[in-house]
Image (cartoon, rainbow over all chains, first blue to last red; front, side, top):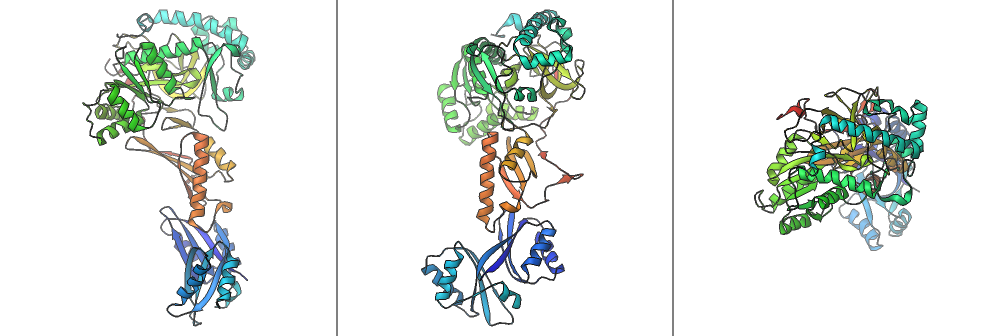
Length: 143
Length: 444
């Protein structure tokens, strides 16, 4: 079970994100979630998309550097306090977060956390034991 | 004391030529007998030592390049038994191979005398306290001026480069009167003194001898003002001994080349043809007196102009302009020689494609040095720390190769400016060359 995230290296220049968005739009790829880590000179765009293989192919075709990384996808209730619950579980298990972002699905009554940690398996086991459900690429495609 | 060696420094031009001719004949024989790679060159060119009867025959001799010296690293151009050598100095090194220059005691003395002439030309005498803030070690700057200062009889402060607090403390406490360092460090010291509330009148300095990197007349005036001194230029290169090959006098109108030890020619860098006096071209040196590392017709790659017009200081040695540029792609950044090929070597070794751009600028009289490197797929990670970690590793590798640390920035693939498909490797924004062709005629 795995949720795969795409990261793209982008220069901190005007129009950089617009170009990526257009490339994905042209390939009919749906963005489920994204987050940007930005520095003064460069940024890292992280995305959960509907079709990884296609997205990687069109982005690389356009000259982008793309990396696929396994992250942890957690389904939580779309209610106040649910993220806090999930994070507390990880905290108690001593699991450190590298980064995190979240998204909601219009068709579902759920929200989803995308979590990057050093040890995915440990995080997944911890969360599962606490009653959380993980999502993977196939689930994202259905959203 | 106006001259360090008055008789030599004011010798009539025809006497200099006669002296050079005698020394050249002897030196060519010495080189032909003891330096195998140069003997091959002469044989290939069909020149015999007896064909060289004077300075007029110099153009018959083949040129030497830095590449020739690197190919024979380390011993190939050594012209005396190893036991006769007392010292080496070395260039900063390109693509892992440095040029090592050897010195006998006689060679060291001769070099130090050249530096002593520069110090005296800058008004120095045994009354002076000379603060040498060039680097010491393989770099020739520190050892050269240190030795020259001893020869003049000055009290010498062997500070080496850096540690500005200590520089200022010794300068003030010991009353340094002459400062020797790179012009950018002189400018930096000036700023630092001002920050500490020490005005130009309150520091004991009265002269500075600055070299090892390009600088402009504007920078000279700025340094003279912030330090309250007169600033003198000095020129040299490791291959010919080090600083002191040429030095400036109080006229500040070009640098006198020590013609009793070196013959200077200016050539067309493309054809190798010797150009008449006053032409702009590549400077070529022949060492007349060096025993251990005697280079004949060594191409410096520095572009300059020579002038034989009489100088008001009384010295008769030919004058050269500051280098106006290079006939190769070498950059001088904070006094250190940097070749784009060195950066390429580091990138390949670290697993990157050689897609890079060097950006050099001068901000507040000191060089900035940035290298943009296109990100490689294998090097990319999804976290900021993964990317900055790669940048830090590249900075460390660059510092190890170049001796100075650039700022390294990973950038998106294909983002580096290309001109006609070829990446623009170097952007030098410093505009360091302001000399016009009349520079040598100024004040004369």
